Image 1 (tube, rainbow, N blue to C red):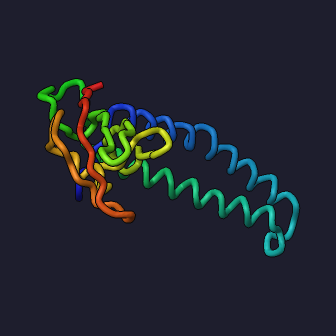
Image 2 (tube, rainbow, N blue to C red):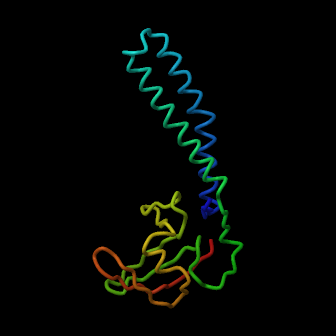
Image 3 (cartoon, one colour):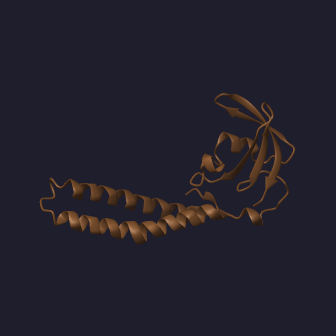
Length: 158
């Protein structure tokens, strides 16, 4: 089985979701199913079927999270050799050399990625272009709109 790289914050978020699903959502859906059963004939009981379907989604997500946590490779960026290189977990300030705009990204695992929060998957084209480079380097990112040239302004291990 492949390991799944994850930051400390990503691990905590998955653990919190798992706890919520087990302690809140699972008991709620069991109660919803019991209530729906009291309404009679299960063949034509839409409330019952919807609750059973939701239960399937919740149980599937619980299994998925447990699997990911069991295969997780926890990477604490603060414990890494802080040599200025872009590695998993680092936060990188980039300068787009075509329009002089600055962007900040953190390279994280797939489950943690959220572009609106500046968190990009380690498997994304931009992360792949950045990994192994260091402050001052120029990197070319192959994007659907064409190549984009960036300069790495800062690499933070936060």
